[in-house]
Image (tube, rainbow, N blue to C red; front, side, top):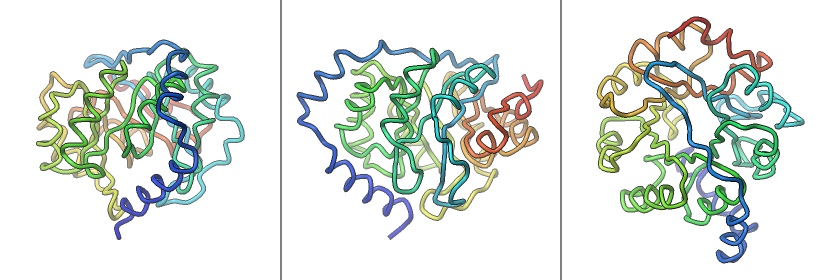
Length: 253
């Protein structure tokens, strides 16, 4: 079983322990904060800053006792959006982190998780998420289509995440507004910035392009920008440098 398959199996098991009747979570959704649309731009290079305690590849990264404090620091430092990991087993995140962050920031929030059940989309919106991640490698084509439609129906923005050319083809069938290119192979956890070189230029410029994983320095950020990234999603480097976004992107335009 691949790393991705193991993570998804755990996500399904954990979801079964917290699942409410769908009608109940839909009722909660009616009282959720209004959706905040991301202001991603081709002309303004930006950062989605991630609340990330741990990862399958690196283990523990930072304790982050208060996710709201870190998210507030990110917002003050100019983040375009906050990514909140809600997967518990490998990333040590939770829905409670999402709630805490939503209570303090006024910029969009990405619920970063392995979305494999429609319940998770209602759950995300009910707890204040504005964006969700659709990992093409982790779902079928029919699920991708259904989940993309559900995300739009709920008013949220989908980041359709890809890692290779076949996944790009699948993503393009959705006519997406945003595509994330992950330089990490989620099945093996290997990282290669060559993925940015191969995929970012192939995505039409009408689509917002997000570079994910492997961005640890200003040089890495500039490299992603050179090949067409409009936004970078960064967790590890930021949690290790006290949320200093400027040191990561500097004067990159």
